Length: 296
Image (cartoon, rainbow, N blue to C red; front, top):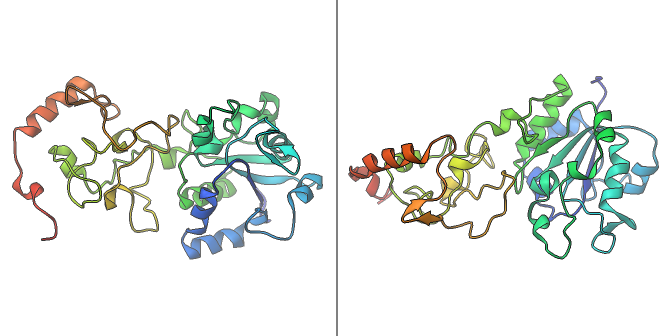
């Protein structure tokens, strides 16, 4: 990567704009650093100098193509400038060095892929052929999340600018950001260990046993890189809904599915036998401190 400011284009496809809102909630000095280090030439909500047609008709290359939203071939379902999102994606991808799918919708289709009236909605990678992918200088990067954390976007861009590549997991996500579980760093871990159940919106208790929390099964750094540098869903009493995983969204997300009182899914890497053994031992003890209000 040269010392010149890399050119960034942000393309919005079928989206609620949640990842744009997330980007705008980034730390102010960090966002300023991004704008001073990169040349953001197009974002439909944030820039005014160029239109999407200007970008498409220009012969200049794009260093980083960031895509927000899922993709479709269906011209009757969704169009931009009288073209399908898949056609626009291919034209932009042909001009790009790096492609970053921003959010779960761009990564694999997300909530839009559940729309039964149009079954061709999917993520970016599924609409690009192998020849085009091989022309990129780096495999497509998936930043899953609904929305994605703003720092994950910025950290990925700065890493690529400095080093040219990032290590990816099998889902194409940066290992630096997605090797942890949302469970890691959760302030409710002691409640989890001693099987003390909590309630929605409360400061005390674990949300895994009744409220459907997916923290122990979700690859994410939400409890290590905090939202607004302050908090996270689980810290304020909202269960993790597993929005970074490729099976999101699921039905009945705010309840724990069980069989004869046992969670159907147990934490990643732990056998059900081991989980039941440890849980059984923990439940034989009562830790009075953990059954009291933190603030009385």
